[in-house]
Picture 1: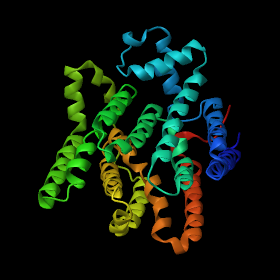
Picture 2 (picture 1 turned 120 degrees about the vertical axis):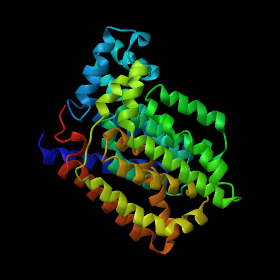
Picture 3 (picture 1 turned 180 degrees about the horizontal axis):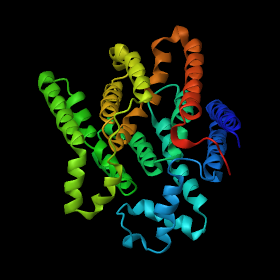
Picture 4 (picture 1 turned 45 degrees about the horizontal axis):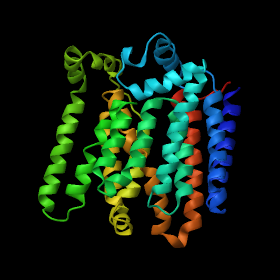
Length: 357
C-alpha cells in the first residue's frame, strides 16, 4: 500500500470511528455501548491486521512473543508478569497478531472508560483528539501506552482521595510496565499540596524541590541505570534506552505552542473546575520532561504519561468560550487532522506508513 493510500486509510477510518463514537452519546443508553464497541472494533481491526507496521512491531515479536514460547511466565528475564501473561494468551492461539490485538484492546478499554468517568463535558471531542494525535503511537511502546491509559483511568481516584484504589491500579500497571511507578507521587502532590489552600509558600518550595530532585535524577539517568544494572540484573535491559539525542525535535515546538495557549487561561480553567489544577501541573511536567528528553529517549517516553492530558484540557475551551463553541470545535478538528498528517505522513513518526496486512 502506498504512503498516500495509507494516510487516506487512517484518516477515513478515524473520521468514521469518531462519527460513530460521537453518535453513541446521542442515542438511547441501551444502544450506547454497542455503537462505542463498533467504533472501537474498527481501530482494533487496523491494529490487529497490520504486518510489520510500527517501530516496535518486530521488537515485540522477536523480543517477547518468540522467546516466551520456550519459557514460563516466571522463568522470563522480565518481571512484568501481567504483560507476559498476555503474551502467553497470544501463544495459545499460535498467532502473534493476537498479541497486538489484545494490547490495543486493553489500551482502548481504559481510554474509553477514563473518558466516560471524566469531569469534562465534551467527551467525544476528547476521544477525537486522542484518536488523531495519539492512537497510532499506541502501536509502539505498547506496554507503556496501556499504562498511560490506566493512569488516565486512575486519575479519578486521585481526585476522590481513594489511595487504595489508586495504588492497586498503579501496581497492576507496574506488572505491565514499571515506568508507571513514576506517576505515583502525584497523588500526594495533589491531595496534600495543590488541594490544600494553607501554607502556599511551603507548598511551592516542596513542589520545586520535588521537581529539582526528579530532574537531577533524570539528568543522571545513564549513571543511575549503570549502577542499578550492576546491583540488580533486571535493570540491565534499560541500558538499551540510553541514547543521547541533541538534535532538534519538532515535537517540542508543538508542546511549547500548546503550553502557551493553555497557561494564560490557567486561572479560568481552574475556576471552571478545580480539578484542572492537577491537569495544568501535568502539562507543565510534560513540557519539562520533553526538554530533558533531548538527553535520552527514556525520559522523553516518560513525558507521554502527562502529554495525553491535553485531551481533557483542550475540549474545555469550548466551555470557556461558549459563544464561539462551533467555531472552536471546527478549528480543533482541523488542527488535529493537520497534526495527524504532520506527525505520521510528513515526519514519519512511529513508522506506521506504509500500512500493510
